[in-house]
Length: 367
Ligand SMILES: *Cc1c(COP(=O)(O)O)cnc(C)c1O
Image 1 (cartoon, helix red, strand yellow):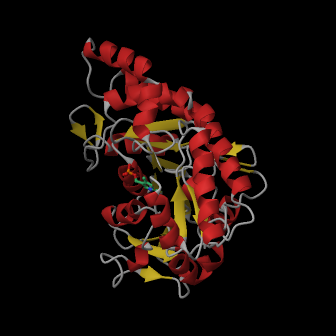
Image 2 (spheres, helix red, strand yellow; image 1 turned 30 degrees about the vertical axis):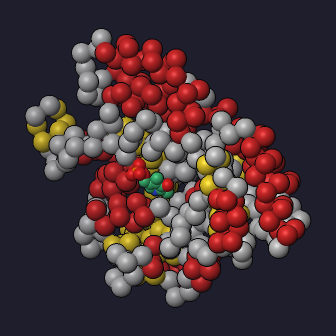
Image 3 (cartoon, rainbow, N blue to C red; image 1 turned 180 degrees about the vertical axis):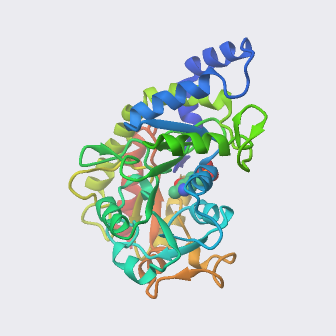
């Protein structure tokens, strides 16, 4: 069976190092906000080239606390994309603000910058570009628009840890950046985890308060916070995996290059990367009008492909009647019926990649 993501394969790769860390942890006396949390915060900030990193409980909280850290809440609007994990939108609502959704660019699958003018209002406070699938959003244009209109940029880098544009890691362009470390992500824990990076020390300090009951000092709540601490054991796992992140991303890229080559000439659209972008292929997503047939054909051959995502957020039952969207949402609506995520993860054997390509070629030649 070939599946589209496989975090347990990665656990197996790093098993002996993970076991050593867990053994060490069993002798430790500090289970909360200990040495491992501050360690991964230092290392991750250095990796991204940001001044500060803050560990939090998960990626959704990273977004919510970033919004609250920037004092965005009730009465405010935040523009983001409809083609994302539902968490991006639910975090805006959790912070008390209103999500406003743009469609996507048909080549990058990332937010359509041309709709910003239409969506901007006097209540708009921030834009959240999502670096979907490991590809870069049109971040220079997002930043330019936000500077001009006095808005914050919150990068959602949950699918693009380590990706770059113009030699700079994503997560460096915004005022603050959020990363999920859910097990399947490029930097994944063995459970829930999240990180935030920023260059602003005030924001860094404020988010550290918000993640722990609003405490500046122990037991003194200066603001209303909550508990969204990064688990000490997960922090330890992340610092092992971070050492290998670039190498693991390069393995994903190698697999993507094989898919690109072997699927060319078929009636499928393979991912497009702009010049200057290092796409890290959290997902390898193709498009075809025969998506459903191809997906079941692959399943019959023990290849499990995924769909990210089957329903755009603005059409989800929870949001379809109560969310502000751009007039034209046709790209995301059309693509939801055509996208297919092929198996990709660092441990996937090249043999399995070629097998998958052979099956896809068979499908189209017998069609
Ligand atoms: C995974 C993901 C999140 C949410 O992260 P959790 O850790 O599951 O809360 C947010 N945004 C995007 C784009 C994601 O892919």
